[in-house]
Length: 188
Image 1: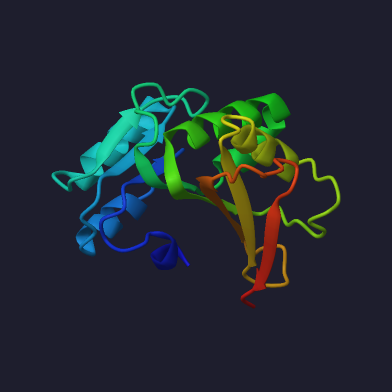
Image 2: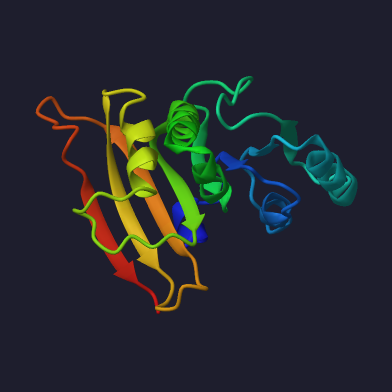
């Protein structure tokens, strides 16, 4: 799924809340040629990852997902979250909204926000305390863009994550921001 989302080996990728994950380094070592940036609030995690990766060409930044300061608008093709939203939701929905608005800001039109979560949306029409602040933050950052959501279930058990792929595109003149295209894919 990640390979399909990366749109080739030149996509610029941001890993929000990267911690000590080797994902970006593994992408680089596998031949990925785009810009690879990891951001985490915990400086000791970034320092440990820097030591582990050595001279692998990956940018690592100590930074807050709520702001993503220092990163330009529309500078990434793909933003990846592997549990950061899950951790933030315990701090309240406003925290998640702010982080998702920052992610929407740095994501290019045509880009994708990939969220790997242990939260499973059962009904795309019903209100959802986890998904609502994610979508609210993305959609309300800039009304000139429309979003679609593809939900990829990796299995029936709760120990397997669900992957949410939020795609950003220019809105048509008749776009209704309340209308969200949602697709479900079962990969079990």
